[in-house]
Amino acid sequence: MIVLVGETSEDERHLSVIGDVPGFVLHANYIEALLDQRYFNPAPWLDYVLGFLIFSAILFGLHFDDVFKTLACRVATLGVAYLTVYFIIKHMAYYVNPVAVSVLALLFNFTHLLFGKLKHDAHAVLERARASAGMSSS
Image 1 (cartoon, one colour):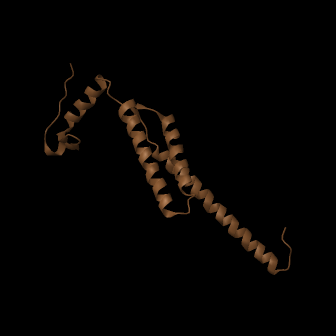
Image 2 (cartoon, one colour):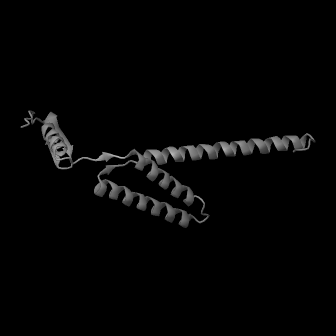
Image 3 (cartoon, helix red, strand yellow):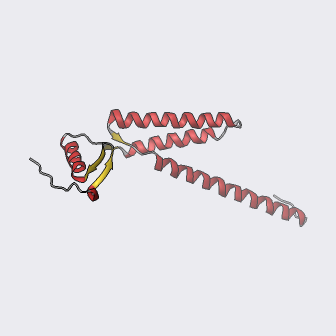
């Protein structure tokens, strides 16, 4: 037998999916879920797999010249990602969060693109300087 003691004052109420409830009701729900083994199992490897797939699909969408195709690819990517994560969480009882991996991958990619552009621009300035000085470029 488990006994929970708590208060029902307005200071101890919390908004939840079932409404505004006292804190001890939330704790009772947590305890019941643990006893019934109704909890999500972590699956960090799925974070990386889904994050990589989302990242790859976003990069694929960047290669279209047409704005409509790019937008359609991104909407399709987000839709498939949402349905995949929903299926994994709801039916397989795994907790996945591919957002962090996708954002990190995009950050690395855009950093690479930025420094690549800066390097290209610096190289072009150097070539123009050599050309104006009458030096041949290699």
